[in-house]
Length: 125
Image 1 (spheres, rainbow, N blue to C red):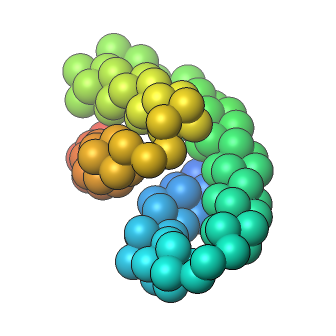
Image 2: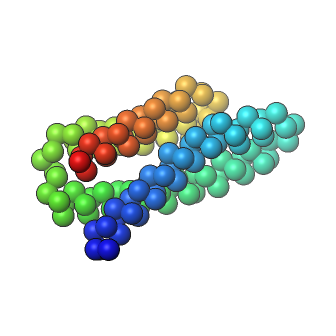
């Protein structure tokens, strides 16, 4: 395994946490905990995922910049679209933090995240 395979592995691990965590929260955690009268566990789960998401985003940015530089991808138009969508997701995260009751933001965040994953596959191919 080369160093860059390890960087790619970290990138994919962080992506899996971010996108998989969104799916897990949306399909399992939120529906179960929203039914409870005590919202404390739901808030605690969201806060914990938020901390993990922040760490995942830092890893994604660092490894992504490293790989784009190493593989000379900065002029790739597909990467430009992917990076634009990353900025969109960061904006949606900020909006979600201010308005967590706006569930359409959650859905948009998930759909845009899936598009980023797809574009990542295209860039790597």
